[in-house]
Length: 426
Image (tube, rainbow, N blue to C red; front, side):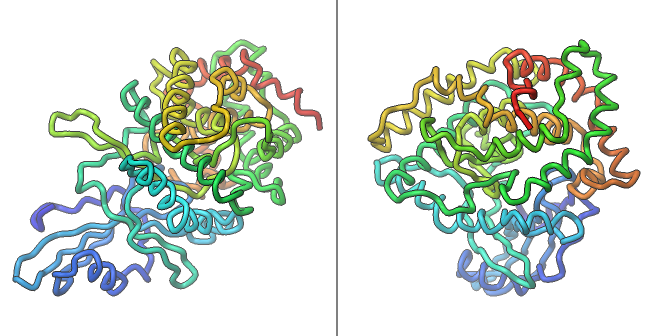
């Protein structure tokens, strides 16, 4: 990007942290651009529009640099940091999401990529993380800005076509395979990786979130035009608590991986060539990684990100595509244990301990994904009990795009037994 190009801010409502200033980037620039002599201008803006990220603050920083030879260049970086405590940051802190992501970027993700390199396969899973630190109690990450290299986010409201879904499933398989081989060689992951959206000693947090959303969800369901038998397939508060707890159970007889935990098109960047053809992809956001069944990530991705034409029609095919890539990657990494079977992966989709990963994204993520961005598209509004929050949730659950999706998706999961909530005895 040249200095003459206009810098656009996709979210004028985002408040930039005061600690994020020019001096914070002096060392980053010194390492990344050693021939630069000084920073001429420092311009921070939002990195994503409202609704693009709910559990962190994403900022794109533009720096106009002057070099020792007199030339000038604009450089940009992406900064990820914590929410303010009163905007959802307290809950994120309690669940140690940023500490978990810190472990991923400092230890595990570099190790996963090294596994492939050692096997003779160059593999990039994630953007380069240039700095991890903490300032004024705020954990932060500074990443290379991949937009300069042609990486883009998909339009979350439209969903992914088959080409994008196939590549997303491939990257997921690459990540999962490396996580299994790493665990096989180095032992179990730390206790932070025993929970994701649900934490064993804080089930009340999950229940509170469900109870806040439930009145608007129940009222909106009447407008969905579904058969009464399907409308009854909603858990009680006690059943939802049981579903949440069940999601933490890991069956040692299953094939398990380090799941991404929040895998959707929102957390993938796609690169295109000059003709607009898809070339490659990289993964983002590792705050919710958890040891468990790969079915959990598959349920998330297909529910949230497959286009409306593909979501149900290609559901089983998506599972097969992922499995083929997984077997291929495990082979590359010389996995020594029995390979997972496709029939077992299909069976895992409907197991009780994976039900949460169908129901939760359907009522929590999908309505926000399909709702066009507004200033209320944030974690605070989603969980607020004031009129702003209630109106936002009603808009989500009655949005025509969401209703169209739910009219297919809800019966689909009901008919497969995933939403037989009476199975969860309380």
